Structure formats: C-alpha cells, structure tokens
Length: 411
Image 1: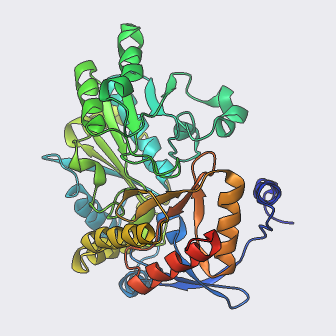
Image 2 (image 1 turned 120 degrees about the vertical axis):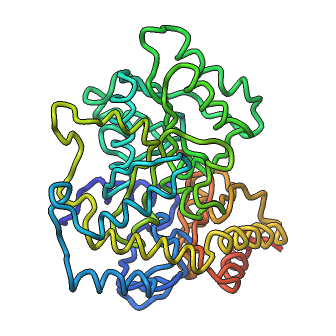
Image 3 (image 1 turned 135 degrees about the vertical axis):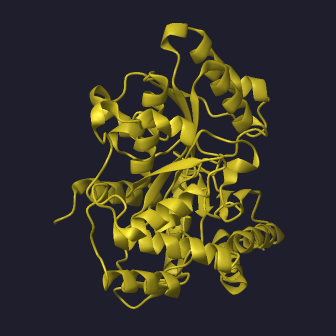
C-alpha cells in the first residue's frame, strides 16, 4: 500500500507472463552468499544483490570498517571541508586508473558516476552528442536514461526531458565482423561534422542487456574512432569491474578508455560510486567561473568511503579477482557437464540462454522455491543471469547446478 505502484505492476505482469506468483520475499539478514527472509527461509544468492555483494554480504572487514568509522565521523562537509577518509579513498581510487595521473569524482550510485562522466565529456569536448548501444543499461537518472538502449519503454515517458543529441546504435554480436559493428558509429561521426558526438558510452560486457559480449577488438576500435574525432570513450564498469569478470577492470584487457565508471561492489553494501578519468581530460572541470559544477551532499560520505576502502583491501588480500575467475570457470564446466549450455560471459558474470520469457521467469520462481536467488536478463528476459559473490563456494555452485538440472528436467 505504501510502495510506488510501478513495482507492484511489474510483479503482476511477470506473474501473468510466467504463470507463477511473484510476491516478493522480504530479506531480513544476509552473510556471505546466504540470504534469510522474514519467514526464516535461507537462500543462496546468485544475484549478489544486483552485483553489490562481490566480497560477500556483511563481510567482517567491511562491517568492522563501517563500525569504526561510525564511532568517529558519520558525516562531513562534502567538498567544502572533506573528511580524511574521503581523501584516502580518492587517492586509492586514482591508483586504479590506467593513466599516468587520474582524477576522481565520487557519487552514490552508478547513475551518479555515468552523469559525472557525461558532464566531463561535454566540458572536455564542447559537444553534447553521445553514442550508446542497444541493450545498454547505465541507470535511470536523466543523463544516463537518454542512452538506455535496454528498453525504449524506460525512455518514452520522459523523452521530452532527455538529451536530444543522444544516439543509440545496434550492439554487435560477438560473431559480427568488426567493421560491420563499427559502421553505425562511424556514420554518426562522419555524416555531419558540425554535430559530431563528444563521447561513446559502452559496457565491456552488457550485463542487464543479457550478458552480451562484443566482437574481439571492438573496444579498442571504439577508442580509435574517439581519438580520430576528438571524442572520449567512457567505459561503464559498474557491473563488470572490481573483479566481477575476472579482471579488476575488465575493459582494460583490451583498451584504455578516457573515463571509467565504477560502483555497485565498491561500497560492499553501502552506496558508493566513482567516475575515474585521465587527469588531462578531467582538467576540463578547471574552475569554470569559480563554481563546483557537480557535487552532492552525500558524495564521499565517510561511512561509504570507509566501506569502499575495506572492499578494495579485501579484493587484494583475499585474491578475490583470481578466485572469482576460477569459480566462473568451474560453474561453466559444471553447467556444461549437465548439458546446461552453452554459457556465455566472463568470470562470475555468466548467462544461460533459456528462450521465451515465460520459461525463464518460471525457472526463476522454481529456483526461488528451492532456495536459489537468480534473476533474468536481457530485454526479452531470455537468459538466466548468474552473479554470485566472488566468495561463492564449490558446494554452493554444485547445489545450484543440480537444482537447475532438476527443474529443467536434465538427465
């Protein structure tokens, strides 16, 4: 009765489509890869809370960091009089960038990081145009929403308020010839020189869009187009980064973007995000009329900053990037051995193609009934997406596979 009706309407549509009830379970506690609901049921979380719990729910070192910070300073004065822990986090994040020098803008959500990146591109290039891709999902704030290729339905009600210079082009399949995939991008730069876009926004692997992988060399080619036309390449690593795909920043295995956005896993459960940029690019913020053009009351919040520092420590000390990559290989092998394939993705961002949305949603419900939290992905809900904590155990992986095989009727 008190929640926005959009959420209850979505549940009703999914119930009608799948033929299964979609009343939500209510989370009350979580630790590691386990979640408990208000009725005392326990689940293995193969969503990581939308990818947030990469180091596991309620990791002891994250909890310890939050607790210690809460006893010292809960809130500061943002960019006017910053807290010491905010400065430490900025310094730590700057070292993640591939550039000789980096600068960082903190935020609370992935949308915040993308908005900061889009503003940076506008300042640096003086051009408002941006290119995104069909299937791309970058959050639903107004800046990112203009580039939401995941669903036109998200954009339609607000179209009059969105950037009219945003372009959404087809996402090339992994098997697509590289030049064919680049052609729509090149046309936007070459067709009207006076209206050339100032940036390209891309996920190294489309997450919510269905765990879709671009052709080999696509990211590097996009960077080449940007360099040729004085534009910026923005990598959305909000889901793919921080070890999720077997690399600390997955896109760097192929190219060096001008701007990188991270979030989700960064705060270990608290809302923290960051826009990292080449210092030369970020200099565009330079003192325009002496104003801080992009800030927020809670950006760089001390509790979130402390949690993020703990997450970065845990990723390093527990070798979770390599551990997650190895777990992804094992899960892929287990699914294949039971004839449940093919599986696509990287690290622990994996997808199993199911087909019609009705069948996918029915499987989601069947797994929920048996103690496994899994979400569909793709605009057509055609795949099951597996995004467990990087700390997931082999026993938990095997349990999911056996349960999935049972509900799918695999031999």
